Image 1 (cartoon, one colour):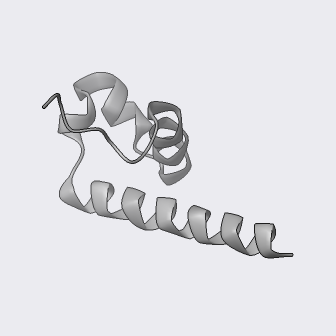
Image 2: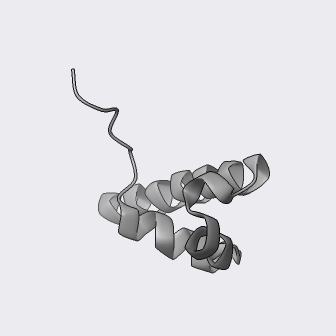
Length: 59
């Protein structure tokens, strides 16, 4: 079946982690090192960015 693909590209995840201020943790410990809260905030931000993009595309 292959491995489960992430909905977010690595570059997008890195960009969001930098924006939210925990990219240093990712560099040090990998994605497994971030807190559940950080991961949740990352998902919220990605959804927000997708919604903003949809609005732009409608205009």
